[in-house]
Image (cartoon, rainbow, N blue to C red; front, side, top):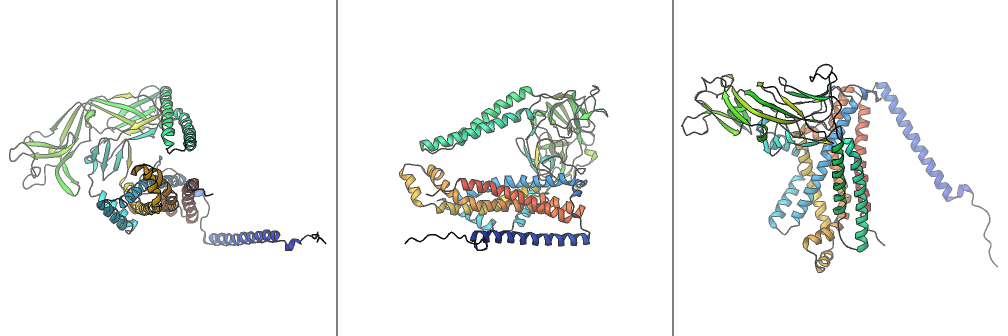
Length: 572
């Protein structure tokens, strides 16, 4: 006799699925109730204390300077812009720090795995030393021990081509800037990126189909560069300046202006409007005179007496140069010794008659040196020419001169991008053109890079050692070289192990950038602290600070987790 199944339904209050749903709803309701109670209590307490909880203060004038900024910023800007500058400064040090720390970490890990005893010991000492020294101490070391006292100042900067390095500015380097014609090139960059992605996908599928190793980048990168270059040339042909754009120079102030000359008088007056764009200008003088007073300079912990420093000139910026003393009667027996012709050197008296400068000859017996107005020195420059680029405020510093002939200004051709080169407009520490990576920025960047790289090196080393030796033996049995074995077999497998802990190191580096305040680098945390002190809106600033770091961290985490998931080994 067959048993028929019961047709009676299970009551809803005994249904397991229903009970689970109801339990979850009750739990969510309790959480919402608890959060509501907490929020109401906090709001009541805040109201009682009179604490500002609104965000309206963000539109107020900031009123404080920020030492360096990725985007234009002044004290008249709002708190919103100041906070944006802080976030960009954090990303500026974090993104480059991640790249440098990764490259250094991988290099140190390979050194520690090397068969060379010297390389192994150097890498071991580096790792065990650096990662056990607090990061704050390392920041102080780079800023106050390594960079500031051991680098020259002002126009005496170390120079490598168009790169300058000194302790008053930092690393000064040429830099490309967007012009007002960049929008003509932008669509071509988008097309180049789309074609490069398509080429990358096509090449990747083709390599898998033919079952051969290879890197799709060798196809996608040339495609991107080819289309981008073609697009740039087309955009260059169509680039032009706004109508009535004019350039002029104020020799007394040492300024070059780019402006819209509405009344067509060729002069920057009250009717003219500065153009906020990068405009390249060729500035020329048939002859100009610069004048300085020799004085004592302190360079790299050494006092240099009777030193003179004119604005630094490059060889291609002048035709002829002549130096002369203003007071010829008193200085007839004095000579000049150049550390760098024609701008920097010392005044001395050839006491032993050997025709060259010897130590001590720049300090007369019983005196401090050939210094002050009595020994004023002039540099007469003939055939001067310099390429300058006006900034986002429609002007730039040119050259502070004593006397000069009428300047000749030539507006150079319009283009989507403008390359700006650094130069010294005065004999002091100011610099114009290019871009500057300041000493505080470099100190924080180096400290974060060296500190984080010591941890990344151990992660990479452990991951490489975790790859079975049989993989290496099999690769060598197939005839692969040591380099091919590492690049095609060992490292791709180790990368799956490296990526997860590497995410934590990247996030740590980003959050550790908040220690930039110890190097006087104004990043997100430092700017937020100033905004909090000035506005008194502690809670809103605290929320913005947490939210900002959370967005940055989640963005890095999402991107790296996506890459990690894509490269995980798929098991059957």
